[in-house]
Image 1 (cartoon, rainbow, N blue to C red):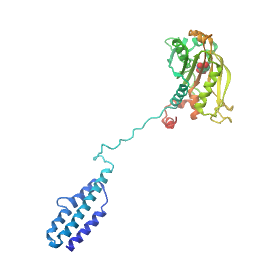
Image 2: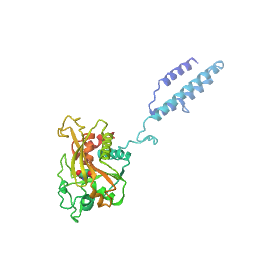
Image 3: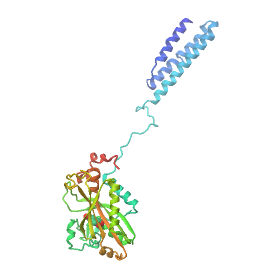
Image 4: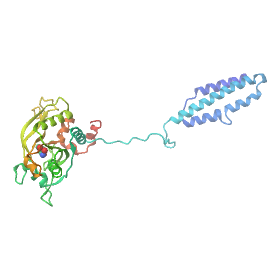
Length: 342
Ligand code: DAH
């Protein structure tokens, strides 16, 4: 009996000292202690050699020992199950390997934001063709053939048909909408435009604009100013200031260009604002009566304002992008920087 108790003590220490070590080790442990020829079974067989008066006491000790051995096995097994699977031992319920997700292009971020801001003012999105005819891109917008203002925009013409061209501005969508829809009209038109320019950090032969058009009774220049001021504050924050400079566009009269305080240097002067503290972001004006007439809209009844902004410029000021070429190079090092931008 003494001898048996000593043996039990040794086994107890062994059990308490056993650390989890994977599924195989747990199984080895089970066979050693709980198997059909295992230690627990053997010890129970010893009962017959124990003196009758000690049998009950020994039986109890053995039962406790068995419980200890079994509960240790449960622990070893559970811990092994929670370990990562190996190639041979796959757990199909584990989460998959993460798939890398792309990021939004900065121009898309800006476009979405523009749509959101003007959407709150009741502007909806309109689209038009990138391959356009002369009438919608130029003539209907008061830019007749041989008009010197056509030189403001170097145009790509389509060889097969000299009446076709790649639109030089999103103003063609104004024409397309006024042709089909009667006032009230309140639209913005984001899209890609093309000009025959040599590519550099500051010029590109394609870029993105967003046009705006509002035609209704009693639309005034004050409405234009307030709308654009609201837009700028929503886009860049409440501290940004705006200023209008008289300008010329054939499709508006009067016309104005709008500047905002330079966000790169905060107004103290830098390359982007050419040391003036102001950056031009758009052209605008009151829709020319001739343009309204071209689409059978009575200029004595209706007035309207229009504007056109370059989205790359907005992006440059918002995210400090200093080279236009970056937008179309698809360099992941550039694009990934916008992963958490909004
Ligand atoms: N189309 C002009 C450009 O590409 C921008 C513009 C100016 C659009 C004035 C307008 C406007 O609608 O009213 O430079």
